[in-house]
Length: 157
Image 1: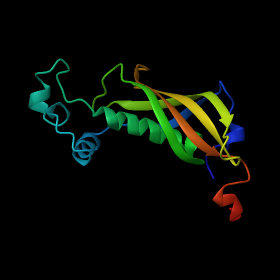
Image 2: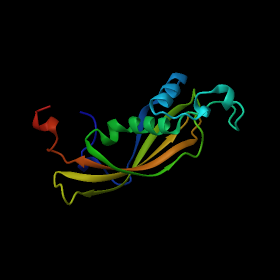
Image 3: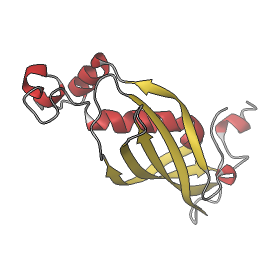
């Protein structure tokens, strides 16, 4: 099973999440519709061509969601819950056709005071486009299982 137990995280360690993901027009349109984001800069090419970007922008929450998804196998496959999100920053725009790559660095970890079979891990995830430009970065705090306590282990997986 993928993922890391609480004990496997080392403060300062950085993990590259691969493969990357190229964003298609359908990805952006569907996500825009699913999330009810009605701003035309995301789906109206004629409107978008009159903005400073000259073309539709990928919805920022799609960018965030893709980067989180890329990190799951490495960082939160054994998480019980996300406890918080902080300092979400989007320094560069993302466009259809861009390919995103992510990496996460462990910022902190501590044992849970109320749940002895779990620990709390904080990470910083950075997403870059195909040119290496940072397009999104955020901190995430997760409640993670300690070794010997997952349902998979109890079931003998």
